[in-house]
Length: 175
Image (cartoon, rainbow, N blue to C red; front, side, top):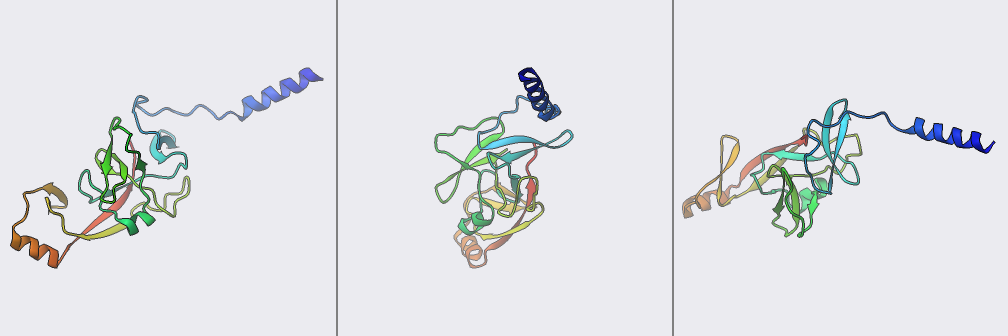
């Protein structure tokens, strides 16, 4: 009887194991501990937050290496926070935010989650975000931020009187 219980238990454990999934094309891709690489569907891999497994987003429209998402924005778009002791790994870098926190960035683009998301349910895809700001040191040309020399006093006055509207769109982060 004991042998039968052991055999049934072993069969249950083996039967409960998931089928072997296809691996990402590059299994050596390093990423930080705050992130997981997950197969969304057969052969389609996405990065997710760890340990919550929430979808991750980039905003197309932010300047490289800088987050424009302020305190009220991060209530809706929480950041993937890095520790001051963390080091860049692979395509993952760290951005120091204006509020003093550190944020993980993928290929120099800050990474976020969305407050309404649940694992496997990315509701933030395609959401637009408007920012109004004056960017000293950058110029917005043809839909992209480029490093520029500091503006003249007249240009600074014009831009601060009427801040430029910048729109960014959330996209799922895929390797």
